[in-house]
Image (cartoon, rainbow, N blue to C red; front, side, top):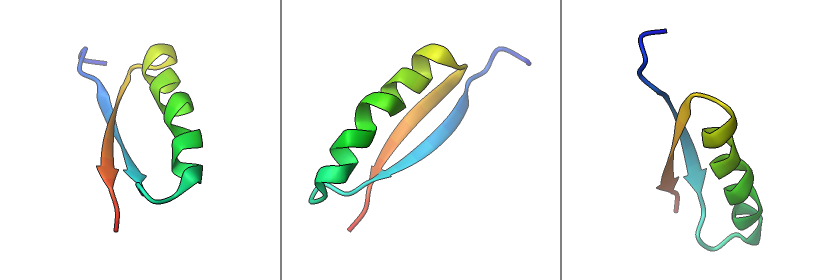
Length: 43
């Protein structure tokens, strides 16, 4: 790999309580893998 991080787009619905459950595992991905999570809202 060339040292740059891969980006993962996470679509986040502010009105859904289930989206909030996915936030911490998404942040954990940044720590455990060489990725950057970009949160994008939907709706």
